[in-house]
Image (spheres, rainbow, N blue to C red):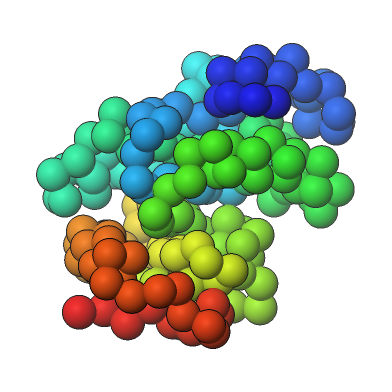
Length: 202
């Protein structure tokens, strides 16, 4: 798997776990492979399964509005998921399904090397940062093993909970500040010895 296109071809024909038997289309991800920001969700839903694209349902429309709030479009960023095929009835992915699919995401991120990974929802957050609670970690950038993550609530949660939507809207506005902070730190200081420390906002 030397490049993204190779990975995406493999994802679309993958039959390594039972999710391949119930999918309509696998959803490898879409967007700008050179983006400094990658958004990672949990897995495709019904609309994503039908179209083969990430975040194209109601939550996707909300995500597009959020991107507009920081002067970006979905073509400016890269969007993908932990698992690339829809779990039946939108259930949570099983641990075996996550572990089987994980190498695809890992390789995608190795190729793109984003400055910031924005996790959407608790499952995506816990894939990278275990033992955190989304209710307390959302909106707080974390550096782990040299990579900066920003945990956010999943956009779907904001569609039916007003308080969560307010948090998502506010947390999203931090993205340009965090990205700028990352660039400043990379330009002026060496990587910190404690890679698990929280990235402080300006």
